[in-house]
Amino acid sequence: MIGVDEARLAARAGQGDSDAFASLIELHQAMARRVAYAILEDQEDADDAAQDGFLSAWRAIARYDPGKAFRPWLMQIVVNAARDLRRRRRVRTAEPLDSVSPPGKDDPAREAGDIDLGERLRAALATLPERQRLAVVLFDAEGYPQAEIAAMLGIPEGTVKSDVFHGRRALRKVLRTVKEEWHE
Amino acid sequence: MNDHSPFDETRDVELGAALQEALALPFGAAFVNRVRARLNGQRQRRWEDELAGWFWQGLVAASLVTMLAGWGLNRFGAAEEIDQSTGSSSVASQLLEGSAPGTNVLFASMTAAEAQ
Image (tube, rainbow over all chains, first blue to last red; front, side, top):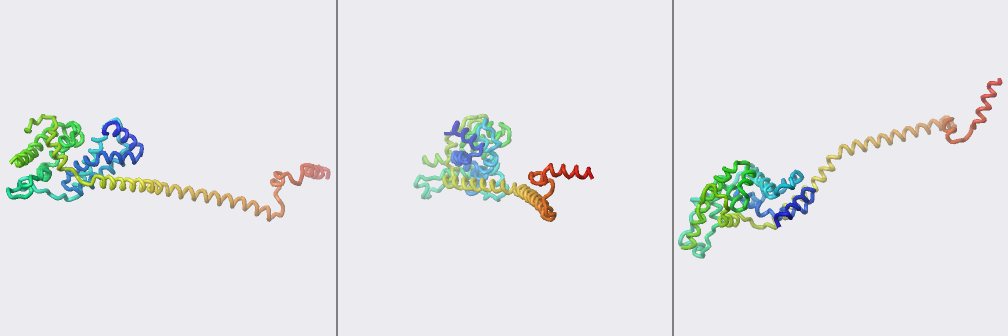
């Protein structure tokens, strides 16, 4: 679906076809909301930012170069929208990783083998600086090449490499701990 | 799974999948509908803004047309009034209409004046 169809849809959207743009929203909403969530750490704020990003992209679609990939262009707009919203709003601060204690031995969730990996990963993400968080999410979760992430965030590629490395360390630690708990 | 090196450019698929799941937000369809509604609202507003942008130009153009029409009506009305006040049509309008006095009458009156 992503590829030729996306390029065609983007070209049609560039000519003012709002239905084509709506199809692009459907294609990319999940990713845009995940990236916005990684920045804002709040679901409602993430949806607001993703929406702002899509609306900004629609207003700027005439300036989009169809010769370039649409996804990074859009994602850069979404990242900017989320950062703008973060500046405008006082974002709820998440609990630091250390304060999120693993479930105790008598925890019913643990007994059921239902340890919430997602919650603990989100908590771990919240302890990372925003740039590291974005770098890991864009690289490992969304699959962007490091060079593209560097262009998107306006930082050198070496910084992205370093951010991915440090961000991964914290997150892999959580992943390892949870897996060990599962095996116990 | 290890920490690899800082120069590792390979995606960590396991961590990536876990992150995708951890960051996934619910109600995707509702979100799409919400953005589409805002998009339609924005398009409509853009059209209204476009019309509003032409308001003053339209007003000036309409005023000019009205003034020209008024001036034209006034001018032709005044000409008719002059005709009515003299009780006969002007020489020019008589010549245009091809009605009396004919050229032969004018010529006769001129030669008669010379003879006297």
